[in-house]
Amino acid sequence: MLAVKIINTSAFPLPAYESDLAAGIDLRAAISEPITLQPLQRTLVKTGLFLELPAGTEAQVRPRSGLALKQGITVLNAPGTIDADYRGEVGVILINLGAETAVISPGDRIAQLVFARYEQAVFEEVNELTATARGAGGFGSTGKN
Image (cartoon, rainbow, N blue to C red):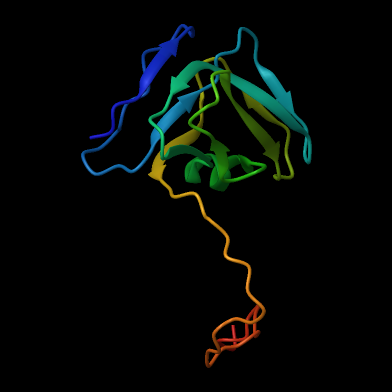
């Protein structure tokens, strides 16, 4: 288990895993009034949560699949990264990609948070890279779809 320090200034309980094998915890909208999102409109929604992550970990803000399917609402910069040295309030950039107006109400589950370990890279500048069968082929070069 990963130990994460958290301050919760919202009116809602701490985030929790909704099933035994869930990868993410749901983030709730810590807002006092509903937010109306017109099609293609985006907004920053605060969560009332402040995190202290261990070095070598990040928190990834990801869309909730049900919200995306049912209302067309997604996280604009998905996945958003919360770095281990960030101490501000966790916010979620939502966008309405649906055709209808959508409403975010106080306490709505708006995104999910997944924790991941990472390594920082040390670059070794070289004049050429090792050859592979794929080479420089990209953007669909390994298949027909």
